[in-house]
Picture 1: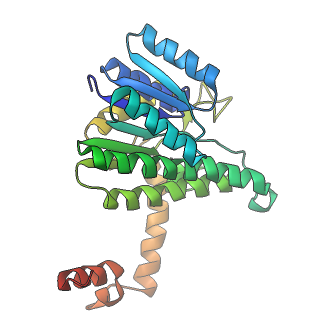
Picture 2 (picture 1 turned 60 degrees about the vertical axis):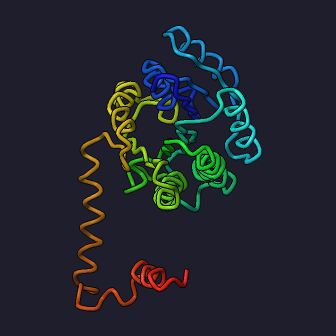
Picture 3 (picture 1 turned 90 degrees about the vertical axis):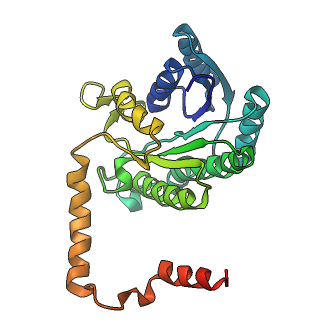
Length: 268
């Protein structure tokens, strides 16, 4: 990563900052982005003390214009971007869906989902025009695959990030890697009070950093997550086995088969 440019939203604390330390130790130039300037200043100073090149840009990812301005600043400062980590996110307390204030639900979706959308939209197009190998990783959650908590808006936002990432991955050219970071229970400002229980952010970053460098589609950590994922997938497979089992010709109504046939005919 020497002399590569890495942009991390939500990079001043938690997982974002832990990843910044990994990239910085590997020689990357780090650009951190989030709304709290004092936290950005503290994070950049800490990175510089360890010998990394670091700078920041105040940015609210829910505002598309601010994300455009962030990209302008990155390209003006470094001439391009090699890695984008769409990491900015907010959490929520466990509440029944009817008890969640609508403004809270919209705020969570605005940051956790639309913030990721904005980053993909803005940086993805510029990376395509840049024409060099690049990476975009979005921070999802174990809650992208199952309900680890009872926080409806948060879980919905992380399920949405999974769908966005998988779709965006298929739309980007081969020289741009798109993947999903899947944290389990990690100790960050989103989970106060569990510092001695949840995995430390630096430990998590150490586990996932090599996977990012390898360009993995899914970047994983907490092994027990597979138990929860299997619970949902087993129930889904059981439903299909009982009510819609595979049979000859069952691809008739498969959308991807249909689109492929149309493409082979040259219609699209």
